[in-house]
Amino acid sequence: MKTRYSIIIQWSEEDSCYIAPLPEFGPYALTHGETYEEALQNGQEVLELLMETTSPLPPPPHTFKTSIAQIRT
Image (cartoon, rainbow, N blue to C red):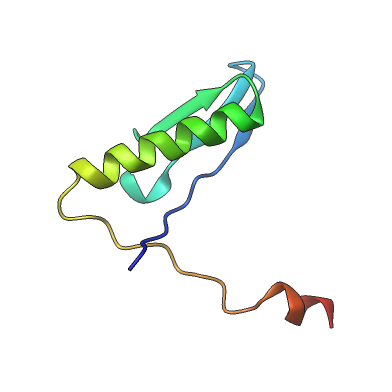
């Protein structure tokens, strides 16, 4: 089963870069990038490392019960 976790990507005026926290792993689990794409890639790499080294894994976030198709109708 593939476990899904969140990567939140936001622009930081203070840091002049995109910040990518991984909220399920706590306040210090974050990375950054000069572009959105770089922050996402870095976030995915950090997430893989966290999943390999964290035991037990935190519970995955709640998932949306509504699909995009339901929103459009």
